[in-house]
Image (cartoon, rainbow, N blue to C red; front, side, top):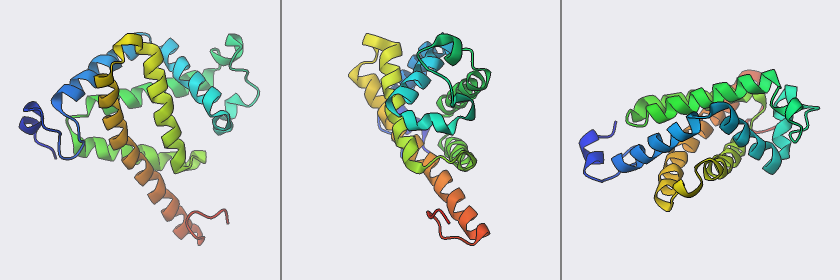
Length: 185
């Protein structure tokens, strides 16, 4: 686990790569996202479905939903529930930034759990792009270069462990089912 004193003196944590100042920026800006959870959550998912339309197929309830029709998009109960879970998970990640071992496990477990949803590791890269674009939209001028750098460093840490969890789940599933990992057999 990284040392709190190392972060306080401006050096990056040896596990997350984040400084205390970067963690502060992330936590402060995350509170802005949470200040209007529903609207900001829908904004992030609208970006996801617009920029990466193939992701709609990962959500059974989104098959016939037009994201430009609020009555369809924002009133979709299953999507609202997923957005709530997504925001709660991210809130937990942000709260755990100074507990790297706990955070690694949370991210790993989240990645693992996405196997059942047919998520591929590269989809997490797309989510990183969506997150940065969503933060830009929500924070506006407050998404400074410094804040963007902090979120970029955090996401770099997040995505490694999300992908590792998913890749391990794929390997385990392949071994259990007698197929080669990464094949569609």
